[in-house]
Length: 331
Image (cartoon, rainbow, N blue to C red):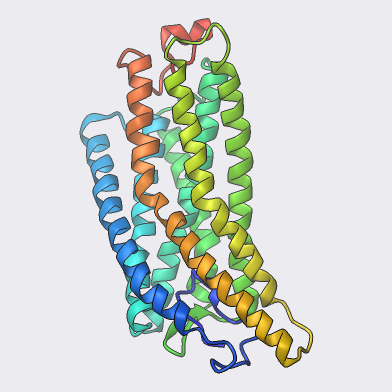
C-alpha cells in the first residue's frame, strides 16, 4: 500500500496491508487532498504561530519578571511551540514533493518536532496544575516560586522532552521518498505515547478546571466570575476539539499496525476503504491538532493574563493578591 506523510504521521506508514499495491488500495484521492490542503493550512498556522509566539517572548523578555514560575512556563511554552512549528514547513514540502532532503535531515526534523510536541504537552499540564494550586491554595509556596526553582523546573521539562523524543531521532529513515518510522513497532510506540500524553492531559484538565469552576460558582467568588468561567470553558473546548479527534483516529489506525490474519479479496477491499476513510479523518483532525501551536499564545498568555491582571489590580499574577486570602479567585 502506498504511504504518504512524515514520520510524525506514523499512522500512514508500515501497515500490515502494505503488501497490497495501489491497484487494490488506491490512495490517489487522499494524496491529492493532502498535497493541496495541508500545505496551505500549515502555511497559515506557521505564520500565526511565529507572530504570536515571538511576540510573547519579546513581551516577556522586555516587560515581565522571568524569575516567576508563571512567566517561566509561558516563556517556555512559546519556545516549545516554535520548536513544534519548525517541523511544519518540512511536512508541507514533503506532502507536495515527497522527502528529498536526505535521511539526516529526516531524523533531525522529527527529533526537533517531537521535542516541541512533548514539551508543549508537559508544560500545559504543569501550567494547569499550577493555576489549580494558585486558586485552591493561594498561600502555597508553589504559587510564588521564583529564581532557581523556576530554572530547575524548566530544565527538567526539557530533559524529559528530549528523552521521550529521542527514539524519533534514532528510529527513522527515508523510504520510497518518504520520511518514515523504521518499522511498525516504532509507529505503535509513537502513537501510544501521543495517546498517553493526551489522556494524562485530559485528566488533569478536567479535574483542575472542574474544581476551579466549582470554586468560582461559590457566592464568595468575585463578581466577574462569568468572564473567567467563559474563558475556562473556552480553553477546555478548544483543547478537546483540537486533540480528541486526532487521538481517536490515531488509536483506530494503530489497530492496523498489528499482524492481521489472511484475508480474501473482499475483506481486503473493505479494509482499503476503511483505511482511506481513516486517512481522510487523520489529515483533517491533524490540521485542527497542529493549529494549537498558534492558539496557545492567545488562550494561555494574552487572555489569561488580561483576566488575571484585571482581577488582581495589575499586580504580578504569580503572587497572591490580598483578595485571595479571603477566598477569592484572582489567580
